[in-house]
Length: 446
Ligand code: BGC
Image (tube, rainbow, N blue to C red; front, side, top):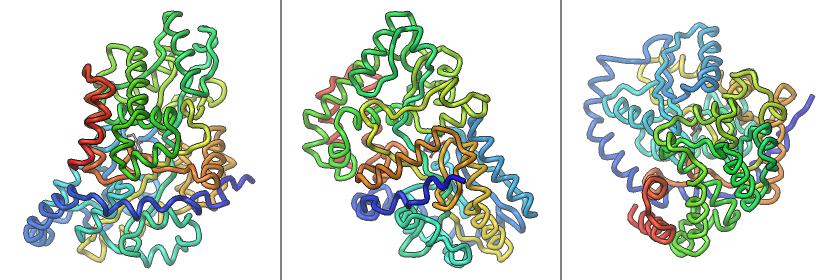
């Protein structure tokens, strides 16, 4: 039996979340205003309509691609097997921006779901709205403090109380590779940015599309994040995206990052704008594109299609980032429920999410690894084993960093400002220098 992530990989994680969550929060203030304005409405509405009525579990999420849907089905199966009714509240859109907009509307109208996929610093923001439920009793029963790495546990707590249940750890700095295409082009699997460009040039010269990319803000930001780490390294990433240091955001290394992004534009096809991330993964699978920068939810797509890691496709750290690990943790935040029955169904949900069985089945389908440290990984594939080992190594080396493009590092307002600039750069002729200057300006303004 392999107990691959037993050594508490997050134990030495930098204390960036707590420090950062409250530092720049204009969007929280905006959100608070809207929610508070609706508070009176909510009280009335709650007595009239309860979307999560007796025995019903309603979960807002954005797991709608093939692999994601299979993972979500595992949750649904567990809930219905326990005797509760599952009410699916899926809002499509990679990265979850659409889902979070829908969630705000629901909460403002006084009809929160039982739980919603809310991550990282955003849990603090929703906690500050006073709409999240204290689930300490469930966490105590389940011994959560003992089975979760402290850094993950602290993300799940608001003012010291559990308000969310963690599901997994996704790694974002991956490159997904079609090895047959690389072989055909005489290219080797890239490990550095320089060898990435070499491989991409060979693929292009051989008439193949080097990169599967969908031009939407989430994918632009995911690509940018890995390229920034590959070009600038961990200290640069921290200074830019954790400390939000203005000189770093606008400085020469950031210009070099945008230079690299400029070059990468030449490896992307004209059909890219608006293409969903999972269709990009299918392109790699079907030999239509050789590589994709994407978090390991992409592996869920390969798995759903019956593809085997190491044979049909390769998962390798994004070029130049092998020693680092950008993490993204999915979690379900629990909303305050008015009826005892709804609260009891919510307790079933939170308990199920933290069960070793669920953390195994969900993550086998999702591409991630369990959040619990005591779940054996022997049923997981080579990519998951590598993710777990790399997580541990990065934790010891202090190179474990939160993914900003997946809402783990900064407030939504700051993240939105950065992603806007990156996307604008990808879809216009903005120069690398101007983009770096705009990045610093956007962070200052948010
Ligand atoms: C979420 C994943 C999801 C991915 C694509 C990420 O931000 O954490 O659960 O699969 O977006 O939608």
